Image 1: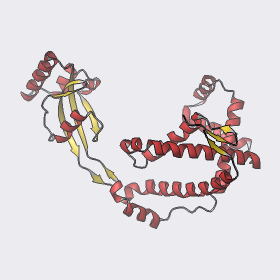
Image 2: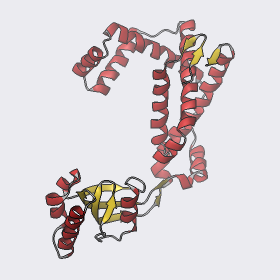
Image 3: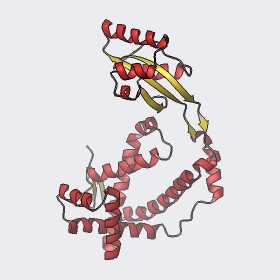
Image 4: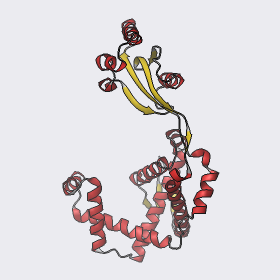
Length: 287
């Protein structure tokens, strides 16, 4: 595995993983599908490495400038952490689990706060996206802002691929076609945990189920009981409760999401320009 060094100090894999996780979560909340994330994972990893290098350079610069952070500011960061993880007891348990003292943890928070102050300085002058910017971006990327087709289904699973399993699922299907409740049959006979909820799988989109199941669910009509379907899990029958067609999201629905993305991009450009100057005076190696 490639290693990256900044002025002789190795960038840890944990730091790269942290940046990669941030990138994946950010793009996932801004419309990138799981399939797109998977296909772009190597590019995202390289971006995560660049960001980890940038974070290291920012830390070194903040240290060099001796950026000041007050005790009150660290107290506020501690309280934020406590709120995020569930309170004082959870905070104490987390420190104990990581075998770190509160003093050392506060020092780590101070390092992050110093870098954050430096980042804010680098972003001084970055303007908020205008309404015209948001509208223009939406019009240029309208096709990306859609809710995919979805279906609401129940299913009954009989595990196995032998004749006994096939006979059992056929008998269940015949009873349902004769008027038995799909929900009750699922509760009594399904080998899937969803059976406890009458076989309900909730709403799901294309590609979320195994291919054979996925195709059947989307090809069916609302209110229809499927034929018997064989997947890697066993034999299934599906009941389609409802469906939603693909819909284009309005500007109002995605306004805040787009504004956040544009703000992120603008700040990113300012930070990249600042980090580029730091890179020019640093020794960065890949081995």
